[in-house]
Image (cartoon, rainbow, N blue to C red; front, side):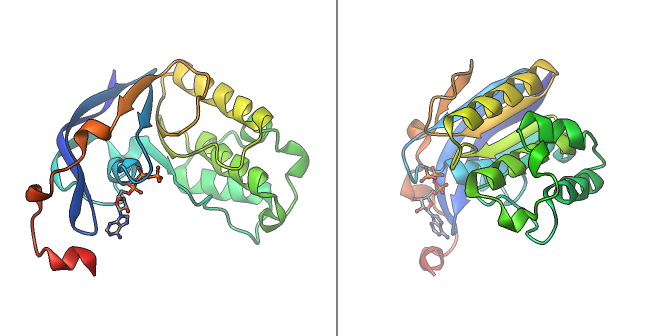
Length: 206
Ligand SMILES: Nc1ncnc2c1ncn2[C@@H]1O[C@H](COP(=O)(O)OP(=O)(O)OP(=O)(O)O)[C@@H](O)[C@H]1O
């Protein structure tokens, strides 16, 4: 089952297209990994897929309620405990499975710790555990393994495999080898040509 598809998609930052002419589809069970050098446009593409910014050109076909996005920021509320953070997110998304989410990311022993007092890697694990309680099938993830040690990367790999085995999908920008079976989408060939610009050229540099 196709969960998200794009046709002739172009994405822009500051009014300038960075990637263009992309066509792909992601189905249940897919792990779709974006590759490309720093600044190539992976974050811009993920934010566009997640509905955080409009497409510059082309179409994205997806039910917006299917997508859970985890960007560079962990999205954690520092003055709530770890468990309260997950309870909050489960409430927002109408999801459940807080205890299972903590177990999946080895966070149970930290459940009552204020999130603001967690280490960088623990915060990142909490940010990823949040995905589990959303109950949403398409995970859109920007560099999810930043700050994670090897054991935590392995936990993440297992969570992804379980998610897609259950009919979910993941779209992930990462520079590391996750050790999971994946479809690789290299964004490099889709670098936008500057003559595709629209609008006021100067505006893009403000
Ligand atoms: N506000 C902005 N206005 C104009 N250009 C921007 C703006 N923010 C970012 N850019 C540029 O847009 C391009 C795409 O950035 P993006 O963050 O999508 O790349 P990326 O592939 O995710 O990079 P990385 O691997 O370093 O995370 C970069 O060249 C960046 O410098």
